[in-house]
Length: 291
Image 1 (cartoon, rainbow, N blue to C red):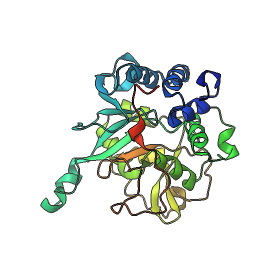
Image 2 (tube, helix red, strand yellow):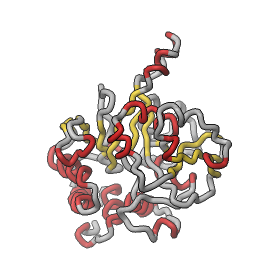
Image 3 (cartoon, helix red, strand yellow):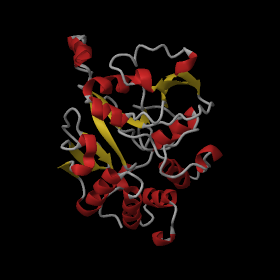
Image 4 (cartoon, rainbow, N blue to C red):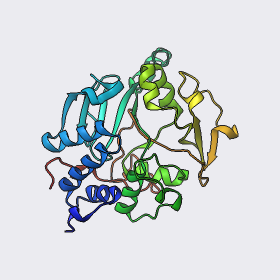
């Protein structure tokens, strides 16, 4: 087994963590990296998880706008969560907030629909995906990332990926791309300070979810962070859409987990039936005590 101590790049350390190549040592190294990369909250949560395993805990002073919120730490989403709970995904090493479904949407559902609709839209990552995460995924899966990403500083948000490439990343973690439905609901559910934290003003566009074959939504901060507006924008307008092979300049992306669907299973079965779906990591191997 290769010694993790000799690995210096955070992407290599993350790849070792994903492959379980000395996962505990890799996790400890990632704690140090994130603490120095302006991700002190995630560093604190990962350190706690490595020491204590799955559990709920209230966020302390490093929680910022999320201080006082309760947070679940583990490789899977928690049971019986409530609106605005947080989940620290100990696989992707990302923190997400549980976005409730807008009350007016629930009120408009028929009795039959209410049996199928969850009270939550899903889990929305509080930050876009970073370069070290994309490159770590690339090394763990033997995928060659584009030069546009490989040359970016590790701690910055990854941009310059196509829709197909971002879909490969989010699918690997059993997730999806965040689209206007979850953003519109989030804008109505969280505080203004939390919304500004979710989508800071230092970037303007993000790749959204698929809406048609070969096309993805291109989300812009000005409308995606306003309640009710994200779902009303017509994707065929060129300023709000992008082809799957395009590399929109400056567009980062983030992950989400649908409350209706949940995390994708590692094996394709008859329920999913999508033979073209990309590889999904088996989260069953992740445990805080793994060495």
